[in-house]
Image: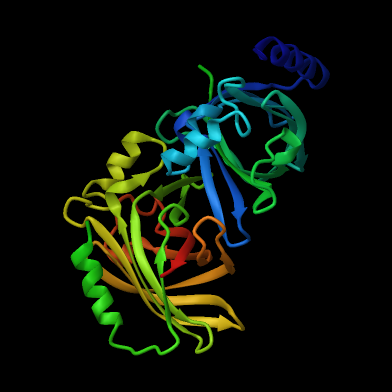
Length: 189
Length: 188
């Protein structure tokens, strides 16, 4: 989907900075999105999506990057099959009409050499809104087993589910949803 | 699964008479334990346990409480099948020999009406060590569906798994494991 766009942007960036963007592929077994939402003001309800697929390009010297993540909404998992089925329904994730959610970002914010934020757009139920993922940890190195360039970290974000038309249960189940993103990516061969 | 284990724990807990104490049964649909572990020092790996049961007795006026919770270790769920299998093996949970982890708490700390801390013993792999859960949220509400009072909250603690003899993969696989507990219990 976004390969051409990414390639074009990478080429542009390379020309501009003489820099070296590197292509990475997400390691699905270490790429998950967990969500948290407060239930009746009492305890947090948790669920996850994953393993997740995606691609990224990162130019650490030029402090630029791009990422594209695809989330198949029907794989939602809360630990309760009955709740998972309910969440797939039309007034919530609407997984039949909108089988995939997407996160696409081209604005990687660095502080020195440290990645601080990835600013992009999240599309859920066909509705797109800006979303910024704050890095709580991020580092690159040599993958101990694959022996290739490897980057990974944790990111956090918050959104209002009503912004995406998911209003069922308000206000007893909160509008504010916290997203905890775990991601690891290995350099493309 | 753990009826005998729970009965034993309950009998032990019942030794203390609590005149104003009310008993709450843990709602398994709103109670989960999530664990977090750093993977190769970069990203956080998460998993949860899908089967659990237990009871809580607490006395808000007398500011005391007890809890007994049993977790089915074979119900671990990380989203990655082979990892679930590895965790259930002798390398980690040894679920075949130790099917349940139990938490028996005998000390509740209150701030006014709210529980702020629950202290007790966690038994894992046949070993018991003290564990204190700190509340980041606590609340009671009248459930419109159940027509009963529900009390619960979010609790957390960090355990050092080697204290229970779970030493596989140290130090690359970390010793410190964060536990996030979401709990709701229904008044009986």
